Image 1: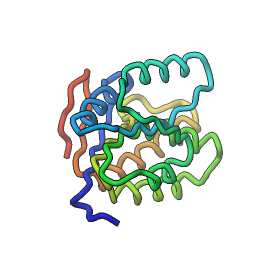
Image 2 (image 1 turned 90 degrees about the vertical axis):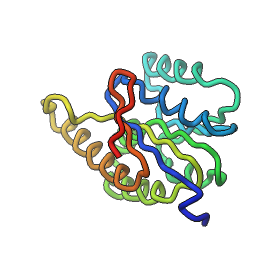
Image 3 (image 1 turned 90 degrees about the horizontal axis):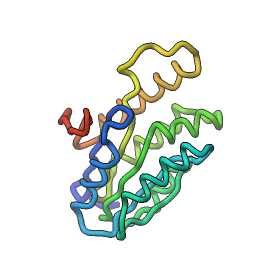
Image 4 (image 1 turned 60 degrees about the horizontal axis):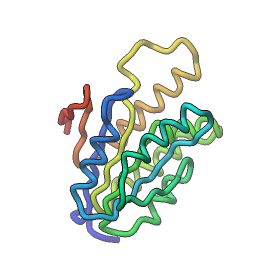
Length: 173
């Protein structure tokens, strides 16, 4: 296993349409290609298919896309050393596990453990969902709480944490 000094984890948080993904892409492309994009989204409907298409259209040559809606840890384990990696996004990955009725605490522990050992410049995107009103149903509250706990776990192991607001990055850590 390469030394931690060979890798660096940057965690990018923000609300919907705050510019998280585009900013993360710009950070990743500051390193030489190829860049690895680990996508966690699943296209359950036309709206999500359009979102996925928009993200793909923004990325030009040099990007390698790996789909990992559930086995994100396995996808990360298979990464080559020293490659720039963008993981987008943790909240979609968490949703996939909730819908599959998996053990969220165990999955999140596995993920934060592997993210604590980056083997290159890694950029991880997640939504900050806890800044609004308290959701009116148990499932939405469970998701909000699980996302908050996951974001905290990743922030602890990250070298740098950025919060996107209106397309602008604010340094948190």
